[in-house]
Length: 193
Image (cartoon, rainbow, N blue to C red; front, side, top):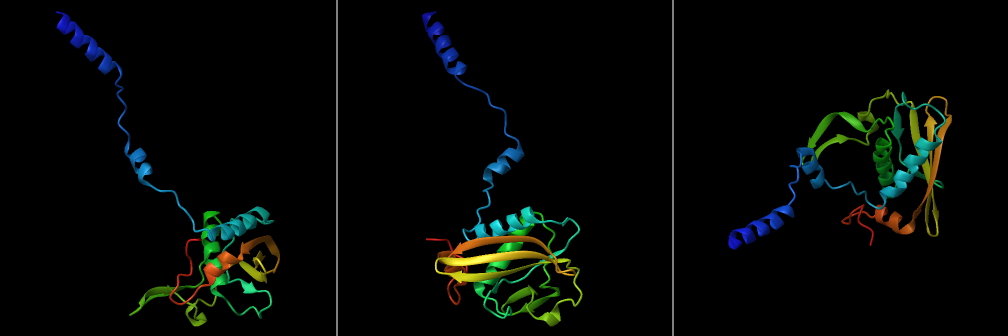
């Protein structure tokens, strides 16, 4: 009898310490496997510009169609793009989309070019781009070299009236500028040391 009483007490203690948890639903299991988006360090500057453009906008942009252009060196004739400026513009498009600004990628063609080097739908040939684009606003910008980095200034401009609708400015450290400017066999974007 004592033997059965001991087994009963031990069973009660063991089972009393157990908890039955509800079965997790499929959504909970999926979200536990998803990793949050981690942008490259250089994207924080494009994100800063996008946030400022949204915050400082003095017009309703819900019906706008925005094109993003390559940022120019303030001392250039505005027809030269560097890898830094081109990459910054591409990152800015991503960040503006995240801010839910209505964008148009005007470098997308109406066809896919199949080549030995790959399949492409983007172009820099103005003859392959529609002559008439439904762009109502354009992001233009300049950058100026400083000893410790680059000062980037951006404007959102109404393409018809030339009114400045919003402005933004950020400073990009020289280390990041170098990373975004690398060419040749090196990656254009890489993790900061």
